[in-house]
Amino acid sequence: MSDIIFEVRIKGPDPKRELIMKNPVMTASGTFGFGREYSRLYDLNRLGAITVKGITIEPRRGNPPPRLIETPSGILNSIGLQNPGLEGFIGDELPYLRRLSTPVIVNISGNTIEEYAFLASELDRVEGVSALEVNVSCPNVKEGCMAFGIKKDSLFSVVSAVRKSTTLPVIVKLSPNVRDIAEMAETAENAGADAVSLVNTFLGMAIDIDRKKPLLANTFGGLSGPAIKPIALRMVWEVYERVDIPVIGMGGIMNWKDAVEFILAGAASVAVGTANFVNPTAPLEIIDGIENYMIREGINDIRELIGLGHRLPA
Image 1 (spheres, helix red, strand yellow):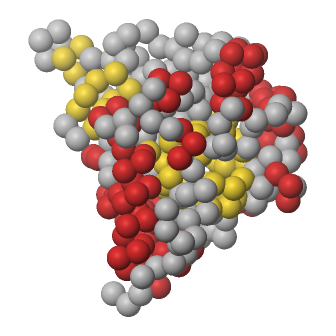
Image 2 (cartoon, helix red, strand yellow; image 1 turned 45 degrees about the vertical axis):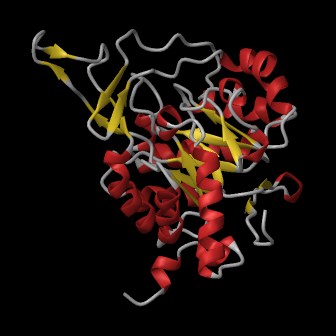
């Protein structure tokens, strides 16, 4: 490791609970499980942060199969928030994650505002949780999530309730399936969010022409991967110009060059999602690639790079 400053911080209301990442690369929720499988391939302590699978109060089995389809330049998924529930996560997954030096961000989902607040309150008291990511953008469930994230008033209510229930840093994961994502980011900031992450998946579908039916059992799914990168990048650019809180960029980041684009657009850190399925070591290659790029460009601090695309003449 060189002498460049690679650290990224997200401040919450309690200075003692600031989220401190050793580098700007984290894993995206839903693409990394709880890290165990990947720990067989590399040292998870090298990651800036791990965002775990979305957690609900009760365990969920998710949607029926088929629920994952490869598309040109991406994947469609309709997993449906399969997870072990709050108690299962705390009892079975968190003890392992606590042994890592990497911060753990817990993605939370609910059917009601009260469920979001309850999860935030319970996780606030649990050792080993460094921040919460409020999922108001998953398109693959019939209740909650995206229903809260596509309207300003409901988004404000959810984020406000979570903010009042925890002193952990609160990150709000935004949906791209809205008219103006910058406006939604501004709403999240006004409601007390400490950072926003974007984008979640785009609602899409595929049809089996032989069976003449949708390929996914749930009909619709979330599109991710390289196909959405230009759109996600544009949204990060727009949000960066509207909010004063950190932006976490994601959406089709497959290599370090993609990650640098997001940082230049305004992302303080980046999350790797679909790339984990294609190349499990992609996050490490992205960390090394960003660092080598900074050395080559004579940039000593990652903060000099964040949003630089906005500041240089066209």
